[in-house]
Image (tube, rainbow, N blue to C red; front, side, top):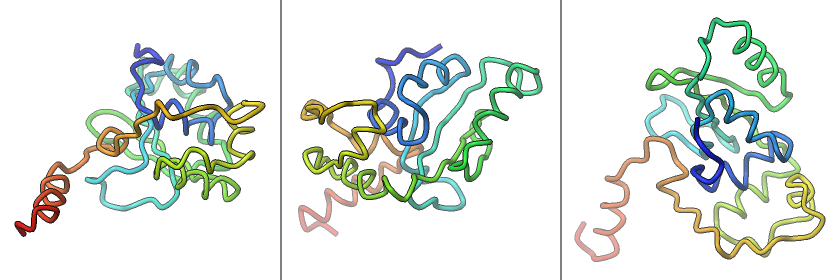
Length: 159
C-alpha cells in the first residue's frame, strides 16, 4: 500500500475537491496510486476533471471492493471509468464552484486560490503552498516526453 507522502501533488492538494479532507487514507486502503489532471494516451480527453488511478488491493469482484466502488461511483461528480495497465482510472468532474481554483492551482498561482478552495481542503485560512512544485510531468498519467523535447526545441529555435 502506498503512503500519503509518496503521492503526487494532485493527490495531496486537489483530491479534496472531490473527496472530503482525510479521505486519501481510505482511498489508499483500496489501492490509490495517484490522482492526475490528464491521461495523454487515453482515447478521449476529460475537461475539468480529476483522474484517480486505483490498483485494487482486493479482487474487483469481491464484496469489499464492490462496496468501495459503489460508494465512489455514487458521487454526483463521478463521470467515467476505464481500465488501464490492469488498473482502474476513475474520472470525476471538478465542481463548477472550484473549476477556477483547479486551473489556478495548475498554474501554480497559489496566492489566488479562493476561500471555497480552502474550505474544501478543510483549512480555516489559506496555507502557504510555496513549497509545492506541481511538476506537470508527474501530474499527467502517461505523459508524453516528446512534448517536453519539442518544447525545448522550440525554445532553442531548433524546430
